[in-house]
Length: 263
Image 1 (tube, helix red, strand yellow):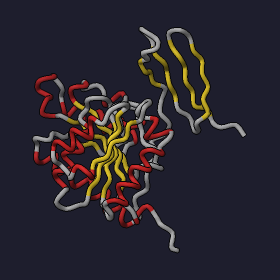
Image 2: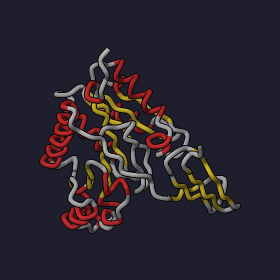
Image 3: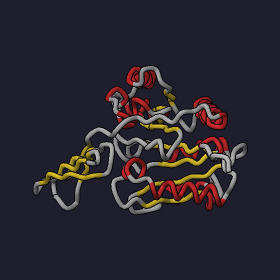
Image 4: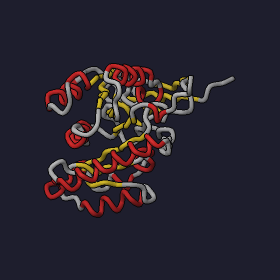
């Protein structure tokens, strides 16, 4: 049998970013602009609910059966970076049930500026910020901001209400990304939606030609999680190359480190 290459299956496009930046809205926008031209599927990630999937189904952007939910039961980034099994299985099931698909969009659960997808899960990734999060966020950098295939500065229509200079935010983002693609987006702005559509089609074409190389934005930086078990505290969590865990804890916090596996 001939080898099956990534180009033989749907483009898997990850969408990550902090809570509330508009990831689900962006996916809805992609679906509305491309559903007449491409065969699409969506996988959402939430910790304990399927709320994002229900939002997209109720929006009518695709047939409800083409929108699947993964409940991670843990830190959202775990299911897109560390143990991607649930998302891989969901993607494979979706592609089998609706073969052939052109694009499967995989939405991360809302996380923080360090969240990145494993290149073993997605072929390309979009990182989403929004103007309501502050104009200085883009220049703070991080793996997703710096090295995702596309950085979206979302909800630009809100900029006048939150005092953000969108051109400056985009300029800061471009500098943080060493000139990699940045898109200022509002779902109410037809030109920016058209630019997003064009970008997705371009990545899909590269994927089909076999010329697109999935990028690894690198390991996630240390980051803090609130923890209901430690009132007033939480834990700092970092990810290394493998899944071995080391812990240092106190009553108020916990350091959780993934160390390279020992031979």
